[in-house]
Image (cartoon, rainbow, N blue to C red; front, side, top):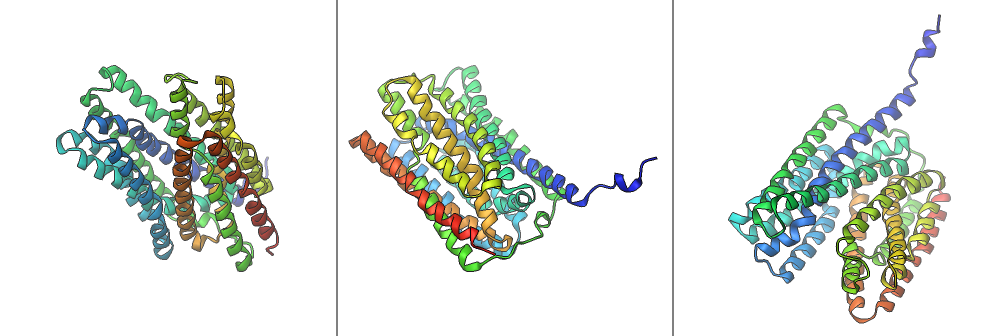
Length: 409
């Protein structure tokens, strides 16, 4: 007869299993929310064109939306830490973030100004929920390994980001093409289904895990001065990485302009990049848990050279190598960036830290994209040099971050 004691579940193992289950739930929330707004993002440009919006207005609204989406995270992160109402803030943010998407179907009646207002509201919702949601996830991620935890979320994210646009492209095809406003109306209405699923799973997660901060109990001693310095060096490094990291639209613009890759192949390349993104997130997320900042130094050194393969390529094969390097960089960033903040900052101040970090990263990304867009029109060689130098310049900052973290007690 077996010893009853041997059948007793180890409390630590049970806690880890619960943390994994919670992270999967939050990851599924991300999957359906990404399916909703990434799906909408894939068709919003031609939809606005059919509504009579000028290119300059589209550019202004998109830029303003991204600015709001990152800048307001400073405020949202601070409020979430002060109130500790992480769940409430997350739910409010998601409500704005996904519910406005199906409402875009009514833009044919209310006009393009209404559509642009909803686009800005969606970005505002993401700004509200991002620091609080990331903080909630960080509590469980610390229990299973911060890198591994956020890598799991990134994989689920990418499934939604891939399925959403694919689903809507099928709807547009079945409805008879991209010049039919009724096809877009149906597309946005269909996105109401994953939007409701997002909120349903989020409310279920809250009822099942009302106090996710309990996952993270133990805190290692921290040298406040060193941690603060490490955070700012890290933010400087990651900002340089963002400045040199091109957006996919610029790369796809280049492929279309040079006819290096056919228009029909460009979406497939993006899907390939998202697949590499997911794999890289898993690899470098696990590496971060074992080797710390060394993981981001390795991934940054690898992905820093995507630009010459993409912008100076004279064959499809070389361009694909560049896209693979770009995908590695994206995946590593998504898994490691949040993990590093999680391991650096105590849970009481993590919402504020995520707000500062996301704001700085987003503004750097915007500035870099703007600069590379301008360089593309004057000198592609200059663009490539700018991209490589900016990314490699991040490595000394990551190394300094590593030494500061290593010196803490």
